Amino acid sequence: MQDPATFVDEKVEEIGNAIGDGHAIIALSGGVDSSTAAALAYEAVGDQLTPVYVDTGLMRKGETGGIRETFDYMDSLRIVDARERFLDALSGITDPEEKRHVIGEQFIREFETVAEDVGADYLVQGTIYPDRIESEGTIKSHHNVGGLPDVVDFEGIVEPMRDLYKDEVREVARELDLEEVVSERMPFPGPGLAVRVIGEVTEEKLAVAREANHVVEEELADHDPWQALAAVLGKATGVKGDNRVHGWVVAVRSVESRDGMTARAQEVDWETLQRIQSRITASHENVARVVYDVTHKPPATIEYE
Ligand code: XMP
Image 1 (tube, rainbow, N blue to C red):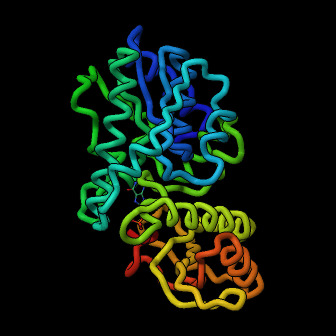
Image 2 (tube, rainbow, N blue to C red):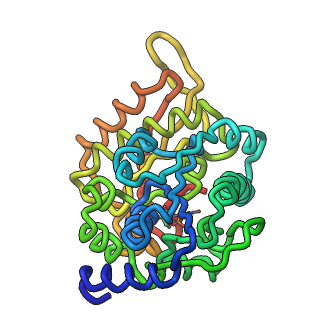
C-alpha cells in the first residue's frame, strides 16, 4: 500500500465513481474491516450508503452499543435485532461447517430484507487479501466471502480493501479517525461466538463465552496479542462451594500473528493466567475449569470451529 492518506483519497474517489447516484449497502460487523470499509464509503457517498448492523446475539459483549456510538454520525445506520431468529436457526446443529452455513444463510436473509427495503443497487464489502486467499483453499468457509445475497440483484460489488493486509487496514482506520477501540480491536470471526462454542449453540454457552471473551480481551490487552479469545469446550467435573458440579470447560487462547494464516501461541505469565481463571470461573455458576491453549497454527486453527 502507498501511504494511508493517498490510499483514502484514491479509494474515496473510486467508490464515488463506482456508485455514482446509486444506493449502496454494507454489513457492519463491529470489526475493523467492515468499519473501515463503511467509513471509506460513507466519506465517498454519505447517506447514499446504508450501513446495516445485524445483532445476531453471537457478538462480543457491548458490541451493539459500541456500534451505535461509533457510527452515530451516519444518519442512515440500521440496527436489526435478530437474536432470536439466529438462536432458533442454530438449534440442534453441532457440525462446525453447518453452523457457519446456517449463520451465513440467516445473515443473508436479514441483510436482504434491508437491501430490498432501501432499494440498494451496490454492495460494499470489507473483504481483505487473506480472506480471499483462505477462501480459495479448503481451510474453512468464510461467510463474508462468496455468500452474497442472490435475491437482490446488485449492479456492482465494491471491495475497496481487497488487496490489503490487516495491519494496513488498521493504518487506514487511523487515517479515517475511527476510534481507537475499532482500529486497534482484535479481529473477530464473522460467525462470532458460535465458533467459540463447541457443538450446539445454546443461550447458556453463549453467555459463558461472551463473558469469558470479555475477560480475556481485557486481561490480555497489554500483552498486545494478534487475537486473544475464550472458547467453551464441553463439560467436566469441578467443585464449587460445597458441591460437585458438572460445568463448562473454558479454553483461553492468545496468539501472535501477522495475517492470521499462521500463528504462535503466546507465552503468558502465570499471574495473569490465574487472574483470568478466577474471573472466568466466577463469571458464571456453571464454569468448572479454565485451561490455556499452547498450540500454534498449524496444526491448530486460531478459532475452535
Ligand atoms: P482460523 O481459525 O481459520 O482463523 O485460524 C484465521 C483468522 O480468521 C478468522 N476467522 C474468520 N473470520 N469469518 C471471518 O470473518 C469466519 O468464518 C472466520 N473463521 C475464522 C479468525 O478469527 C482468525 O483471525
